[in-house]
Image (cartoon, rainbow, N blue to C red; front, side):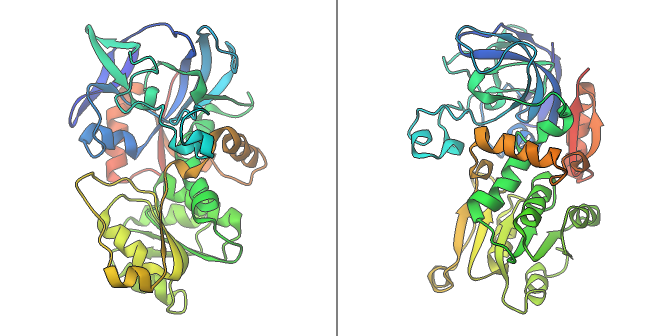
Length: 361
């Protein structure tokens, strides 16, 4: 099959890869759609350190083509969305109702038995998040798939596997945005736009979008932002001016850049929340004033996968989509075939899309 492989740092390309059948507790999915996410790029460029070579892709939807022994939650022919966190139900975090922190996802991209189903010219490959779904097929843990209504388009369903789950979940599960509150979103890519949609669903009275790119701000307004601030100016001063000088109740950072994290912190009011969603480099740190951290009483919240329980939240988000209360279709601004995947990531770096998507035949 064809797959997008990160061979070494800053070098990824489409390769012919061999894939083994699923083993116990695994399924093989024929991919129909896979999101072009900044997290894939972060693996390829070393921002998120993972052992290479690795098949990229962790946001996708497709059709179950084969099931291994012991699989009962899906059957051949089912339409499914993949979850990049397996939520095993048994580990330390799952039993404490924190399935988004499940430890069963191997950072090396091996399956639960420690082996891989992927080979390139005889060399074993990892699969990002045990999915590696920027490929024609993916063998994944059965725990990482959710069957969906066949009426839902694969392209839109795929986004719920990462961007939308993370963004909307950050609003409802991490920050817990209240009715009539004020919100600022720093970074208006796919996840940031999902935060904006979530804030609108939560009933926020003011949603301030902050980004350097005018096209991203236009997307933000389309998805529910009441105000837009170009970050080339002084975004903190602009946000405070829009909130009577106080700052917002809830500030979200979705770029992974420490300087922007500090801006998001400064833009929150005393006692407000600062939700950090963006993934920065392991070598970088966000600086906070040791006196004011206590004195201002702000809550700094790390957010991974929207603090979500995908088995509950994925069906709920798709139900909101079917009720036309959550716009997934509009997030997709360009589609590519798999051979165009390197171009898709170049467009991602250039900020051309709200969300790019690879579609398969």
